[in-house]
Length: 179
Image (cartoon, rainbow, N blue to C red; front, side):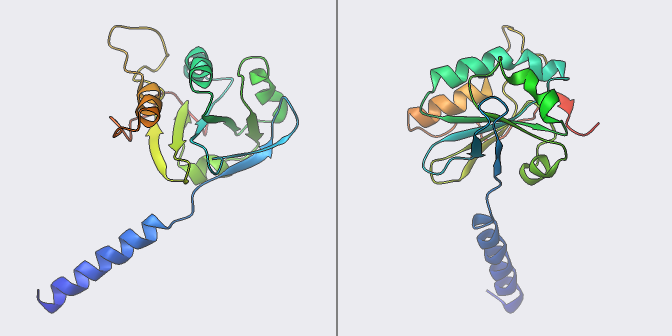
């Protein structure tokens, strides 16, 4: 290797190292239902952090599927995040989701995760590595369809079966978090 190739290789290695040890985004707040402090991703557990909005028909259309996943995978820690909303607006989720939901009036958590739309899901391994980010499925409305691909379910099934993930990133279809 010549000198310039060595410099490029070292630069690429340095970028990879920085990326590998970059801080993991996290959320901590008060669950709108229990009023207890919650955080996610949860160290030592596979975790799903999903950005939601009560005013988004796309987000509401995926509620049943997200509820079902949280019941199908009880070993996984689920946390809902409602960015850009007051706690009163986020209270919509109190009776609808069987896992903690936190709200923030700003967008710091959405920005930290890179969440753009609702619903937008992020899956983390027990050791904190991001394994997946994207949509719950390939449908904007969450409706049953013969061509529906349930990405989040596939990822959780793959983790549970300890096999390589079929998908690690997809497009999150839905309403923009920032209006």
